[in-house]
Length: 115
Image (tube, rainbow, N blue to C red; front, side, top):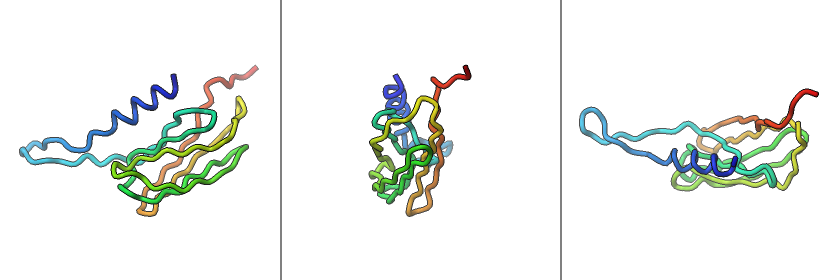
């Protein structure tokens, strides 16, 4: 379910141009975002980054890791961390792009409840 929802959000954000009030073409600029597609392996999709931007993605929490990736022409990327997160683990993912894009995302853990 989470993977399907993330895919819908990623592909729904793809609209990049439209028509302005004056009849001219306008460009929609998206803020960088991170979306979790899978929990194992932890798969994170990045959208709204600058085209072809080099991005360093860092996983921080009980597990740690770093991945370097280049965004596509559409400013998207996918990274995977081969980690198994604990049920109540607090995990933060940071993505910092070489052209100024920055985003911090805390992975939600909906199954974690107080006893």
